[in-house]
Length: 95
Image (tube, rainbow, N blue to C red; front, side, top):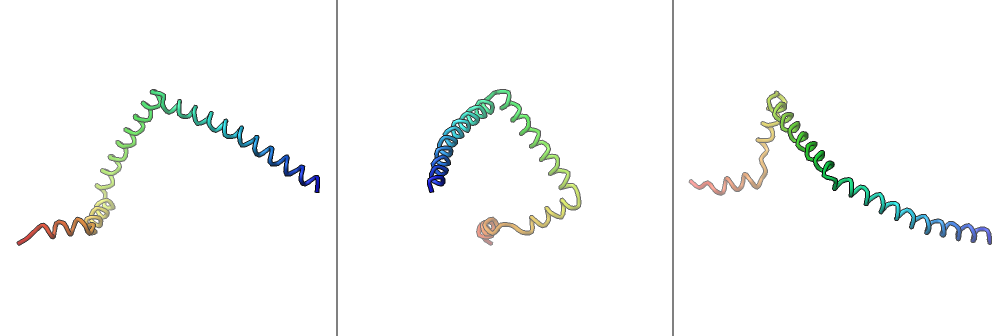
């Protein structure tokens, strides 16, 4: 019984000390990551990467729309209009 009690006490002490050290290390890593992210060079690189991704997306979208699959997708998406937009155009036109 005494051995179990000592083991549990040691386990609890290790957990408390480890969690404090773990939290401090976590905060240190978090602070360093924030410093890196706020670095102007990193921000510039992120902006360039975002611009390139946007450009590639637009080019890919244009290429897809010019294929038969793209035409089929465009036709099927225009056939299924949202309910709210079809109601607003119908109710607005009075003969």
